[in-house]
Amino acid sequence: MSQPGQPNPLPQAGQPLAQHPYAPQGQPYPSQGQPYPMPGQPYPPGPQWAPPPPRSGRGGVMAVVVVLVFVLLGGGGVGAYFLFGASSSDDGPVVDTSRDLAEAPMGCGLFTEADIALLIPGRFTTEPTAIVGGNKDYENSAQCMYSNQGIATGSLPVAFVSVTTRLHKADSTESGVDKAKDDLSRKTGSPAGVPGADDDKFREIESSRDRVIAAEISVLYRNVVITIHYTHYALGEKQFTQPLLALSILGLEKL
Image 1 (cartoon, helix red, strand yellow):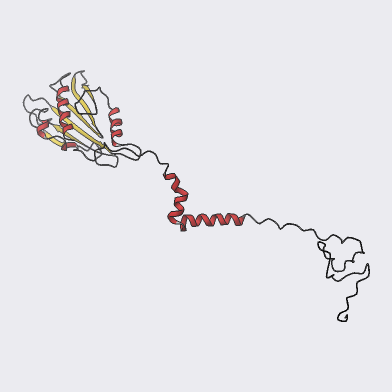
Image 2 (image 1 turned 45 degrees about the horizontal axis):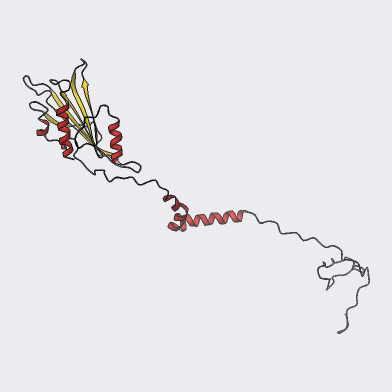
């Protein structure tokens, strides 16, 4: 062991070093047992530095999953707004239901028996039918049958009237008015010019013997379509127009 205040003796050239306390800055320390370089000679190359291996991408994926779970479950309404709120502004135009009627007289509630007595001779029955669907999400419909068939006496001719009313209801893409227009467009006939109607169609119906014994008129008003079928065995061609026009005008007045 050296005395205090005396420097440590330097090793001889070529003599191995256990560890040199000071190496030139920027040079690697010689490894244990590696010979110390001669004066003027460079230090032997040390192990090359290499960058650390890249981190696995799984950590980033897990972070994204955690954020999404928080947004959807923990973030509640705020997260849902940022994820889905933008799409709500892209909804289609609002359906205009300003002309849709919320209700109207249905089936047997549209006409009184006194109104129908002008078309059917003698006594007759009044009965609702089950042909149409009733009050549904898309429409409210009903049908009523007035008939003297089976109870007409003497020389009274057989006659009957069926009245069908449909109130079309709006949905997310179409108003009730537009649905009613589509309903009328599917019916056959020609315009009759019913006063107060938005549109109408009228047609005469022939029997198997090529004789007109019935006629039908459909009247459109806003989102309501009234269809009146009239059969009378004593009437003929062009004799149904005026009775059906008169009854249609009366029906429109009650809407």
